Length: 317
Image (cartoon, rainbow, N blue to C red; front, side, top):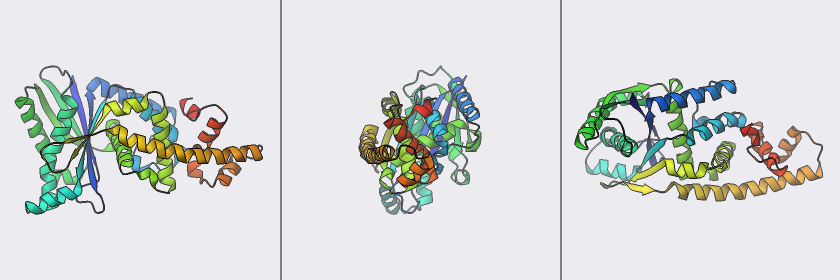
């Protein structure tokens, strides 16, 4: 029996044009992670797809059903995801004050941030005494240079002793994301958080609208919004010795208001077309709406809603 933890990051403190960088951890018992992995691979098989989940690459809604089913399944499992957000401007200021390069500062942060993330994921769990913990990190050559693996192992074992948690870090290893469903999961959920926090949904682009449609469908299904808020914890580091809690609900509320207003306009437009020309083909309606083929399923969702079937009826079949 062992506990598995997965670490990933989005943006970096030295990445040009990025106000924030994001670091996330996701974990569960080996049996839980094995069951989740099997269930998601079964979803892939049923949909005849084996491509990886990567939120930044989700730019065509032909994959809507795949992403929706995976997200809907995972959020209804007993999972915990912790994400720390770093203010990059503050990080730059600290590096200058300490006469450090950004690479050197990243090396120092990689000691503390993963430890805080993993401790946050495990602190409320009643793990068996002397349980082994296995940590997997998305493969990145920079991590070797920064000695990330040995630093995490040393720090986590030290905190286990200090806090009498009685777990042992058995291994910290890199893994290619295409080999790891859990790494794909943390990547996708972190991508959604970044999109919500940075208000990517306000961009007037097909990619933004396609991502927004996925997130709206996912959050509006069942109790997913409540579970998303309960199971994903956000913390921000602004350069002080304390992390600030960030309520996920604030970002969800802003998104839902924006998306609802957008959808009302689009549904009204499509409804007018359906009333005026009820015998047109799906392609003709799509073209009249001004949608590229990459947004076909967005329009079909609106049509299902207008006709009383519910926007997610196709996805739940």
